[in-house]
Length: 128
Image (cartoon, rainbow, N blue to C red):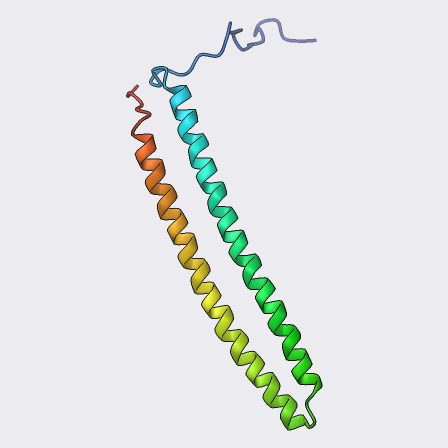
């Protein structure tokens, strides 16, 4: 049996959504800034993904060529040299790509931050 001495608290029924004090009606402006920031982020993710796909495709072509060269080797010494050259080139390419992706990520982050900061200035929020 429910305890009648402590009535159950329910949330007040609101007629409609009202932004918290301090937003001063700029909710639409803040949402627009958020949407632009998301679109910028999505473009950045797309650029990052395209670069990774380009590199992966190039590496697969390199791998295929290395297998063909390895299959043509006539001695274990030739095979070892083929594998050494392959590993050396792959290492150089992977390190270069890691640097490129890091630069791309930093560039995108800086561009998005700058865009967000300039657009956030448009959507001023008054203090509570």
